[in-house]
Image (cartoon, rainbow, N blue to C red):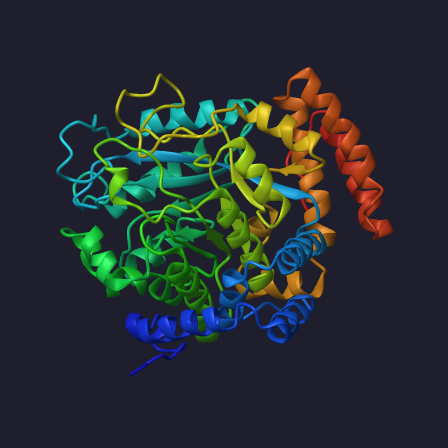
Length: 472
């Protein structure tokens, strides 16, 4: 019997197994129901999103005409809400010591092959200078879970160090944090430290599989992990990011669980996740990929991203360098709004050569930041290093209200162009700079508010003259 309750604080009630199974059965039974499929797409076209059951029906269908309509609508929604802006960031790994035993992660405590390392504050500063010298402004802080090597005090000190380093014209203006589930008290400390988004992947919402994949350590506790976002929200962190690792479990199940989690946050706290990440399992040290037979194809991956864009139109969708250039291009087209670039997944790999055998997973897209910016410009996108909403307090429900009203575009478009201009002036190759300047000239004309356009032009000129860090 289902105990589903989207507002319940109990993990197994807001992610209810029976409700997911019934949803999957409903989707299977209705995958060729043209009346229902058309009705769902008509609802999606209103930009109000879809519930998890409607999204599951779309995911189940293989009708070519319906699929094309899904992709076309995903492009339309993305263009309407995000324009051609693609936010750029890089991960920063602080420590790979871990007390957990996750079967899919090389950081697991029993792995004797991996080179273990924890960065000192001086080493973190070197990493930040290296990242700033590439042009990065946004980071996602990552670390293994370990009470001795990565306590909350170390995380807080590291955040302070990251924000304090200013090299040439560089600055890290937003630090998102992806660390293990913790207490309300510790989330309050992270909030006070000025983090951007708190990110935590569920890996899989299927409780038996979750417990099998995490046999020992704090992460074994399904409820504590799954309820982490509730504690973060209660602590005042209103921008949170969720995600699953596709390939660990049946993707249909986790797709529904992901949207149920988003609904739970919306229903319980008035605002859903700020971002959703959709990583796929990748080769890594001491991880047997043969154990994961649920890996999804590129076609299914594209379909998942497109339907997520329909279901949660105002939520950012993140794809990392786990994906190939070709795969990233496909999903950028139908919904992705944030990408990592020039990522190093080992501890201390930006400033110096990566420690052999110390990365969390193999990177698929190994291009430099400039190569990726150039590629995005070639595709007609606006690479954005913007951090303005976070720094202006436009987070949580305030951000969502502005986004849903369309007013956010008066900030996002000029801010994206100005941060791109900073990159072009300080870091870009000649070829990238020429492409970027041409795009800025074109895109500035698309700003519809005359006053905003005038101010943006003035700021762009001041950026060219050497000043930095303007924002709306």
